[in-house]
Image (cartoon, rainbow, N blue to C red):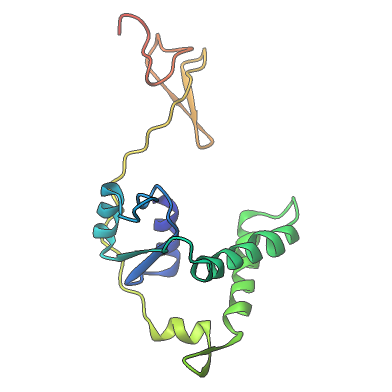
Length: 170
């Protein structure tokens, strides 16, 4: 959800429909029915969810090939000393280049950018989706817990324990 939120904010809105592979975080893979947890997400963003049909390589393959281009062709050009901002700017330039390529849709020549312009984004909800994150962490001897590059203090008596296993007597 965090990634969907970040992309939606960066794009400045949401589409009317989202398409997903048959991943367990979105649907029950065997039936393709949306999970109750993800139905709440879709309702929050007011989007319809389309799940790729099983064994339909032409639908899934197009998305996979786009991901392959980004992962294999572009990512390999990013050097070790590139900052996140520089990498994002480089990826943005690639996307603009790819969006300008001519394609045929319904017999007419068009570009991805033109198709995107024809389907404007709807505004984002006023607040983020209310999600609760849970991660198992071990408390250090200094009563600190590391999470996403930061360290947070916890009450005394917790060193060596995880968040699901409180010390005896607490």
